[in-house]
Image 1 (cartoon, helix red, strand yellow):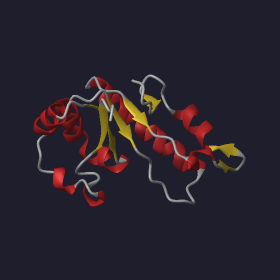
Image 2 (image 1 turned 60 degrees about the vertical axis):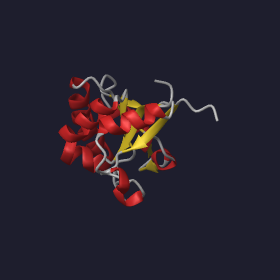
Image 3 (image 1 turned 180 degrees about the horizontal axis):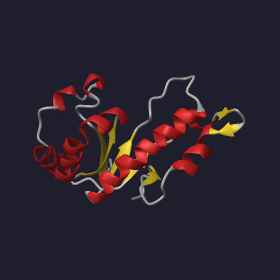
Length: 144
């Protein structure tokens, strides 16, 4: 079909979304299976909360899997989140990004339509871009 790489979702973070059967497979074994299929895996989606709670384990998994980036899927804020809530989450991601950067793996974040809504006349996306530390957090890209 022409695929060369895949993007995983963190098995523990997405166990309830169909990745549960992968939870007990070691990253090295997963990497071997992916390579045996003629593919590479360069990035993986993580839940924001799982990185806050299990960062060291997730970095170890990412390194063993050979990832080139760790992608935060979403902040998963409630629908009525304030602009301050968004800024606070972005600050937290900056701190997480410091940890992944020290490990040699950049942190990215996916974009969605809800980041392009306004709160009190301010585009959420603009607030995020203003708050993210560019050396630590970048937008997810399929081109590494």
